[in-house]
Image (cartoon, rainbow, N blue to C red; front, side, top):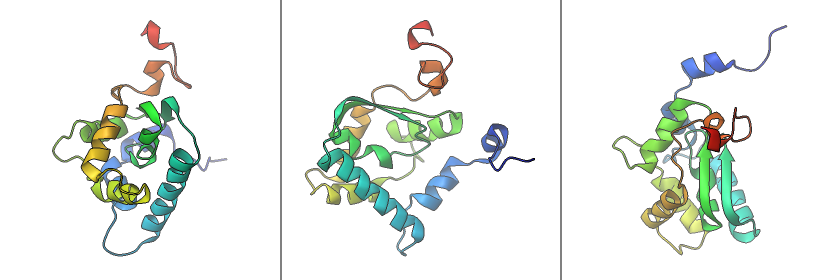
Length: 158
């Protein structure tokens, strides 16, 4: 019987992080189901991290994909954030944004929306820099190499 899940090899061969970002995280001029879902997620993340009191020193986001939306409100409540993923192509897309490389995905409409939710205490560029500072550990290695859950060893042994 065939599984309903995409195999790791198929995912690695065919998943394009940029296409994924453009489809699901690009606030376009026309209302879309994707925009509504993203706004719903952002509102709930705002409630959890900014109103709900979830805070701490370290947040580990396992399976971040090529995205930062889930970390925008979290950077107000956590001093350090580690974003991990199991695929190089997702980590490379995330690194482009972290390093402000040409061609990095433009998260500014999403960041502006989150700033609005948070009462505009900070503006978009300042919010992006705050998140870049919070993501202290380079996401250049998959979670396995860092000894995180699902990993093969402890980080000290690497």
